[in-house]
Amino acid sequence: MNDMNEKCAVVGVFGVKGASQIAYFGLFALQHRGQEAAGICSNKDGRFHMIKDRGLVTRVFSEKKIKKLKGDMAIGHTRYSTAGDDSILDAQPVYARYDLGELAIVHNGNLTNAKEVRDQLIRRGAIFQTFMDTENMIHLIAKSEKDRLIDRIVDALHRVEGAYSFVIQSRSKMYAIRDRFGFRPLSLAKLGDGYMVASETCAFDLVGAEFIRDVKPGEMIVFEKGKTPKSIQVFEPDPHKCIFEYIYFARPDSVVFGKNVYNLRKRMGEELAEELPVEADMVVPVPDSGVAAALGYSQRSGIPFELGIMRNHYVGRTFIEPTQELRNLKVKMKLSPIREVIDGKRLVVIDDSIVRGTTSRQIVSMLKEAGAKEVHMRISSPPTTDPCYYGVDTPEKDKLISARMGTEELCEFIGADSLAFISIEGLVRSVGNDKNYCKACFDGNYIV
Ligand code: AMP
Image (cartoon, rainbow, N blue to C red; front, top):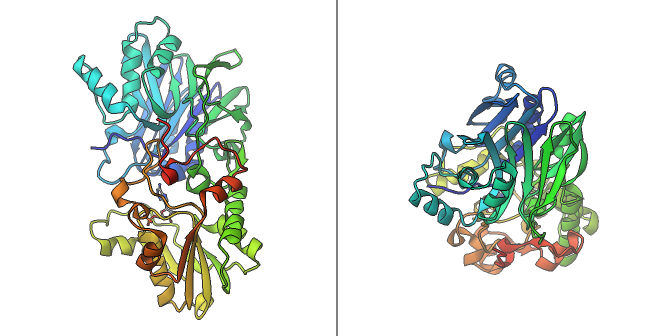
């Protein structure tokens, strides 16, 4: 069982003709945040229409299907989940009929008290359809004693803990909500006479929506026909924005938490070059995750940038994972070295993170086989030593290689000539010395 609601994307469109089409394009732009399943729920005059299925956004939807999703309101979701829990039931939006009508919810994040709340609800007779923590919200809203939906949502929000960016659709309104820590991003834009919210601003760019601002930590924005959106500060903000959004998650063209992702990744590379210089002939990125940092490293160090590793973009999720041998094949399917570029050369290879160590180990051996004289791995994040409970899909602590090995031992394990990670201070410097970030995956400091 997997009751986690991992790295995902959400969108919401309100007061726009053909809202489901806009939601579709929004999800298309956010596909990098989850490839497991996709779904859209639209609403025409209070009647809900929903399509969700496993697979990529382009597989789940066709023009014909989008046409069925009528109305000028729509919410959408793309889901990422770890292997073994691929049930269609666990795709979003989560939909329900209840005493006030119909309701649909999409969620990016992870509720840390999900099990506790769920067990309580089940003891009181609730029947769950999915393993998702998001379903708790539906039950809490349906069971609240309050009369108005908005008060019921606020009630429910006081019962859940952890990370959430929610978009909720009722028969006449849409609600965009971010937890008080602001772990996961959620941004607001204007689109024609209506509005759009999305996990990342790259969704706005594709449909020509104009970015207004982020939904604030602890804020709920209520969208109602013919009215300007109303902001309600449900909780006192206590920002702990996920720094991993900048390192790996978000698309480089997005503005996340007010800053462009590409520029910050380059800064991390510059920081790496300063903190951890090495003598080499070329800087080679692990595509695509290491490209921006490698450019920064190259520009700061003066060592030329070369695309010594090619990436096959057509490798989706593969089902071959049972043995280490096959896991290795998976990396090979995705990445291959250009012998003519790297043969006889000393390389600084840049990637964004080491999680289990599979990728780095494979890359080093691949590069050496292709003739690299030296391989110096430089990682634009600190060692990932602790799992994330706030929505990033990291394995349990005992599978995190940096929780088990120090840098020297890990260097030997991956077979590199040297290995170094950016320092936590260096990382914080590169994101502008802002202290309001969650770095729990690197320092184990969990706020909830
Ligand atoms: P590993 O092979 O387990 O060490 O994974 C490291 C690689 O996975 C790096 O190249 C990262 O770009 C990528 N990565 C890091 N975090 C995640 C994540 N949460 N989901 C999927 N891939 C990731």
